[in-house]
Picture 1 (cartoon, rainbow, N blue to C red):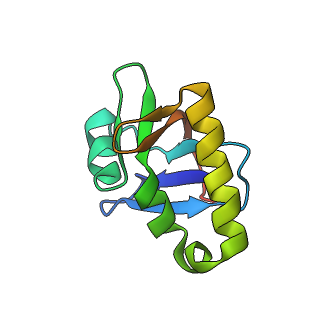
Picture 2 (picture 1 turned 90 degrees about the horizontal axis):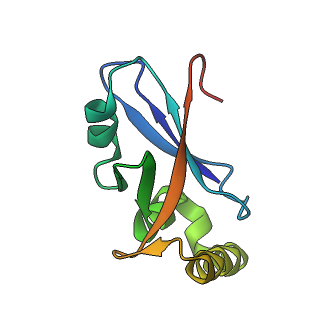
Picture 3 (picture 1 turned 45 degrees about the horizontal axis):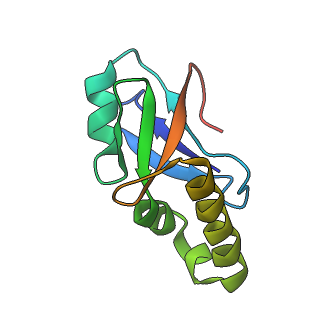
Length: 110
């Protein structure tokens, strides 16, 4: 799964894509070269940026962004397993939040 942050328009948008892929987590930034400050604003309520170039995504925000999937017991089991794996690897932080790497892309959203 990944959080897509589209910074190419004045009203930045944030969406959870590939929500059924529990094997990876990242933030894909569709960039307008607006800088980290704009990205931090767009992630408000979803997560925060770390100084080392990663993001910390709030577990509850990921559930919220998943929409109706969060009511599906099968999806919740996969999501909870992902959280457990992240905890075992040391990728679960206070909040709780999950550590995710950032990818910057130019071009159209998926």
